[in-house]
Length: 225
Ligand code: CA
Image 1 (cartoon, rainbow, N blue to C red):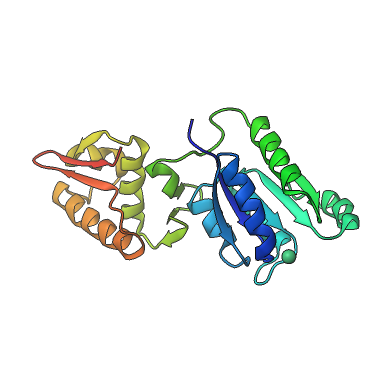
Image 2 (image 1 turned 90 degrees about the vertical axis):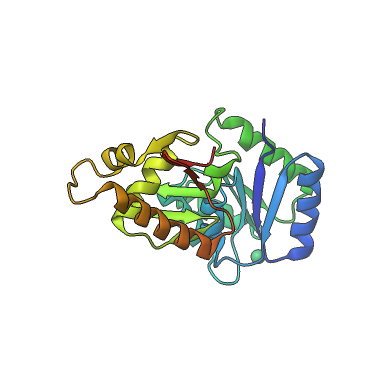
């Protein structure tokens, strides 16, 4: 079982550092953000297993982040707030957070709540680690993010990446990729696969030093297993 990876979005760094230390001591991995602007992209792109989200944040507030995350993700969210009377209001908004914790809280209690929320999730519901956790393909919106950064792909590049990533490790010939990625598109030929892959790699390289597409000499391509 991989370690749960927790994202703390909290502008009080003294507090979040204590929480981080408790989570680390409990065997979890932790990332921290001190303001809200990149919280959604980070949570989605890095596929965290749980987000501890403060309500009042510089940049984008916790309410908006929670709403935005819930549009595309069921990542467990624990909201924290400085006002106990806020919790009733938050519950009334039906944000879809998994738990609400009022400050000041004991870090030990928060870790227990994190554990409880993670336990409630059925096995396999968490996104876990591995290469696919870094790459998020949203087929409803035709959007791909890598490590939380959106890739600006053409429809053909999107289809190719989606086809490859659907079966990590499996090696596809160019013909197979054509049939899989462009079943209704007779204008794409096997050598154009190469140029689309080249462009895909260039766009991926612009945001990450990780190249998930493996060339298999004389055969075709595979998505890194
Ligand atoms: Ca705050």
